[in-house]
Length: 362
Image 1 (tube, rainbow, N blue to C red):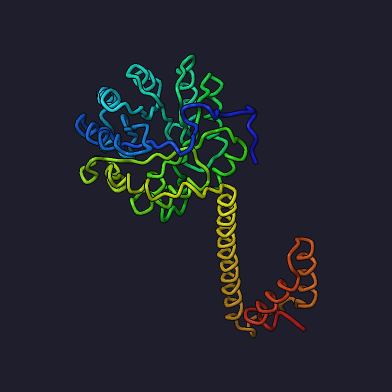
Image 2: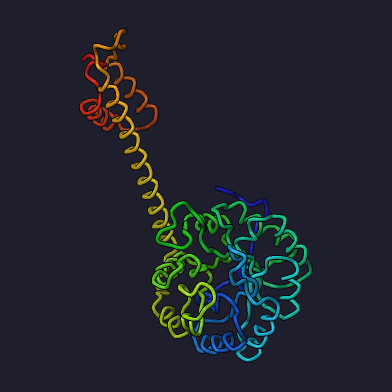
């Protein structure tokens, strides 16, 4: 388990810390037009619990031809939303020029994206640009599961004077993300919360889920684990969205989702144990796969040996005494803390089914 050299990250009396209910940040994946922003914000303003409006101003896209956001012009629309609805505003920044423009337009909360968190040089530049600025900052986890890199980004910002800090969990890219867009790896966040209990933690449920059907279970798990806030993407007409249409909700759909969540029976410790059990179960599954693979490979080697005509072997194969092999295996099992009866049963079955009879003598 990692312990930060900085004793305390985040604070419990800042804007990002929850009070009675989790803070809800909502808004479109991308700012597309002033009308789109205002229509969405007006719908969200009616919802109980939504207090911060977010929109993607600059969009880091995989391909250069993709829609990459409207840029600085959209910050004026964000400012209009704030003036008309009274909602606080948030947007993602990926460099010092973004920081300068966002501050100039009165953005209330800055978000460091996953593709920025992976670059310590870039995070340091952003942190330096924020020296002397009192503004809440949420830092998304890096794309790959690297807890130290995530904490390092938070520490850089704290060292430059940002005290109202929060971590934004948006899932990780793994070899098998299914059924999620980005695998949640809840155990990483449990460890983060254990080592830094004062650090507000938010869940970007939209980027973990990647589709509407998973938004509720992802959000509920975050609530059960005691997260301080949720971030959910909302659009007045998701079918026309220029990015991530499949994971955005209309404001009325978001209202239904928030109303369906169970906030009353929160037991973070029970949820944490559930996450630990889930992680251990996955480890068992992987080990079972490895065991099956080993048995399959052994079977293939045995089959190849069995296909060699005995009369063509000029030198007699070395005789292996099964009793000696088994005694050695049982000794190894004892030293490794593995049940000896289990080992004996497994290897007796392996010998019976796969071992070549001419290699052993009873």
